[in-house]
Length: 265
Image (cartoon, rainbow, N blue to C red):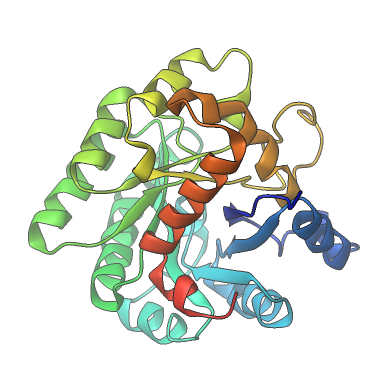
């Protein structure tokens, strides 16, 4: 029986955790049915390395942006810079951007400015925005809604682990929620309830590797192959088996990440 194919919509293959065995990590992902993945840039200075990984591996795409926890330490991105960098055929999203008030609340104002620049780049390119949100639900909902009123854009709330209100605000704007290994943790019942209340047509899955490995690998380094573990753990929330859920979330990915769907597999 063929292994169902699924997409890891958010990973960090440029991180040093993978440096010594990147080819093997990608091979294990493919063996697990994870035939496509998006490796995410967190600092524009790292864009060449992120791009090179995507260029070297079939089925690997990338996103370009400045992580909110890096905003205070990096030169502020410009819309023009993001537009230029995102023109590459394998760059399929803008981000990750967003707000993190848990670790970097002191740079909240700069994070908000950076977020709005990334939104404008997403709007102008038609590429989806990849959002990181932590302990900033009210400001995040407000800015996403304000900006959407100025002009529509696509968006995924990556590694969703915020509250029900932000989830509803995002879904009301037509955005997607992405489930990481956190959704598979035994004590994540409240989070699973948030996902279960969302239409399955708006769900993506991801690893956020090397972080947040799902059971049975929790506490160890995560990798794209483990997307399948998270998907198996949550498929039942929508009354689906793994194969159907893998197909549904892959179709969702193709709908949001249209540039990846049009590109090479």
